Image 1 (tube, rainbow, N blue to C red):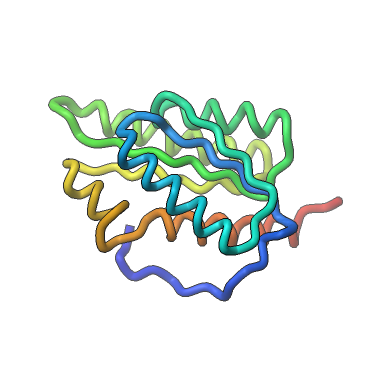
Image 2: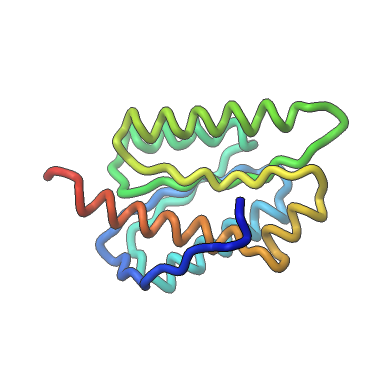
Length: 156
């Protein structure tokens, strides 16, 4: 991701519905990421927000799929943190989850924000979540933009 984030006009989210599925692995970081997204959406007057937790980032697509089968949302957000270990497993999880999220978005005609932070070390994750780069804010802003677009162009 770039460090040159776009600037958006504020959105009144009172008539939007957003769902968040957040991984539980790396609890300090995923918790901080979820808090930042939740706080921003609250400031935008979002009234209809559903949050579910799943074990890890690999389970985020399944969680979003379950929610979309049972409820209508203007946008979904998948939040997770995948940090490199001693193997390349983190690449597999990140790539599989990213592809699955895109497939779900197209299948349900609902935007899905891929808010899975993938890094090579804990310090890089902290920099992007609780440090000088606020990915939570960026994910929340993207969710509002896409939720508004979904509401505008979805047939009733």
